[in-house]
Image (cartoon, rainbow, N blue to C red):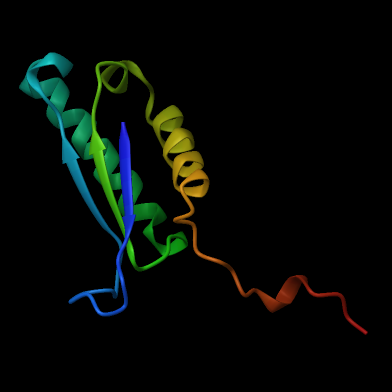
Length: 99
């Protein structure tokens, strides 16, 4: 489950997005919980350049997160940040047609 929030510019730190991860014992033993949290932290670290700097994400992990592959978790996370509106707007000028 993913909860998101966009901070206001008046907030203390709006220089980078933030993440919080919660996993209860229902997810599995400590090894499985920590593996899932490490995977999501790495996915977040790699994708935070594409996110809006004022985004906050709170993940509440469920049991399927321990059974999914890294690639599947990454794909679902990227889709979720796009769906929640946390993907940064790109101002790439290289895709403009040349006159």
